[in-house]
Amino acid sequence: MSPRKNKRSNASMAIAKAIIDEYQPTNAEEMQNALKDIFGPMFEAMLQGEMDSHLGYESNDHGYKNTDNRRNGYLHKNVKTSYGEIPVDVPRDRDASFEPQAIPKRTRDVSGIEDKVLAMYARGMSDRDIADTIEDIYGFEISHDTISNITDRVIETVEEWQNRPLKKFYTFLFVDCLYVNIRKENETKSCAVYVILGYDVNGAKDILGLWIGDAEGKHYWMQIFDEIKARGVEDVLFISMDGVSGLEEGARSIFKDVVVQRCIVHLIRSSVRYIPSKEYKKYTAQLKKVYGAASLKAAESEFERFKQSWSQYLGAVDVWVRNWSHVEQLFNYGSAVRKVMYTTNAIEAVNSSFRKVTKKGAFPSEEAVHKALYLRITELYKKWNGRPVSNWAMVRNQLIMDDQMQARIMKYEAY
Image (cartoon, rainbow, N blue to C red; front, side):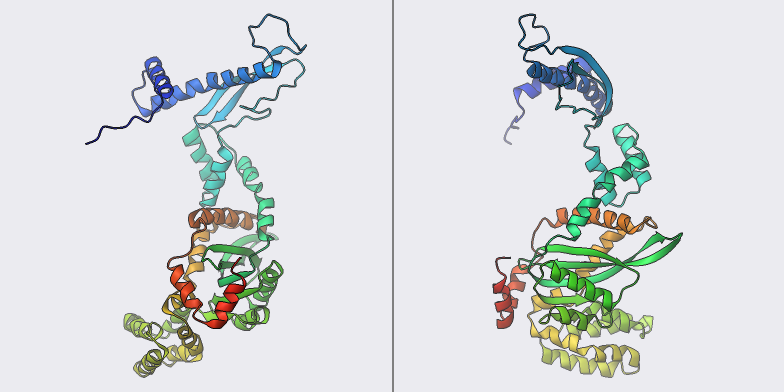
């Protein structure tokens, strides 16, 4: 076995040895306390160096000075750090022109706590849980008002994000709603949050925006489509949705060449209501042979067998008869494209992530909803990291097999 390579610098090893020799820590907690103890002197040494540079001479220099400005004692304050609160003496000068960088004026927190609060809020933690966690880990209290003030600072960013220009072209849009409780006029109302997830030409995910309305409906969806067009979207290949009445016509009125696909999973849920629970497994297995067939001809054959097998459940069969065109159009495209377009699972996964923050209870305002969901979106962006969705190369190859779609894609290739 090769020997362990020592990548530590001699300086860091010497500092570590000095701390251990001085404090003799026996466990992790004692080591943390030792580090906390030296933080104050480290900050003070940095500040003294900044003051020397500011004045142009060191504190023990008794020679001629090029300035009338002099040191003027210290400002004592407690500073919040990642190791808890520590006392620090900040040097002052007579004309108050010293602007320290290590601990800027009016700053009492150098722990990066704001980023930590935003991250915890984005993960669905309540104000109380955040406050308790900060106290447990960092050793200082943070009020609910402070947490609210920190998270409120993203509101302007939310507005900029919601109104930002969008890309000119999206291959797929997935539209869906989730419901949140908002306190309005001394009562709590359930409101719809409209969400659109898009895949660009490279298969990268983006959430185009969030819109809040009283209830899901085709007219509000049309307004949203109008808005995203005004924000720059010129063409969309596919829109997958759960079947709101009139949504298909509304989408085509804004994007005339779009293919609107009903979610097959939602159709299964609608039809299975007419099937006894003991028959669910058998029923869904035979349905899968229909929409999962290798070709349209095979799907039509399986559909005839399906209708005969389940003819006693007219309601279930009728769901598929009425929506057969949405099954039929799947077979205009390759299997990789069908796998993307036939379900809204992609956006349902986004909404599931949103519910981690909406489950906390009623929100005081629509602004609070936007703030919480936007912070959650920033976490999703980190997770996605601009990467294309799985198997995107195959999806692209199958899309360009259609001459018209290839022309539309090539028009926006630069975007």
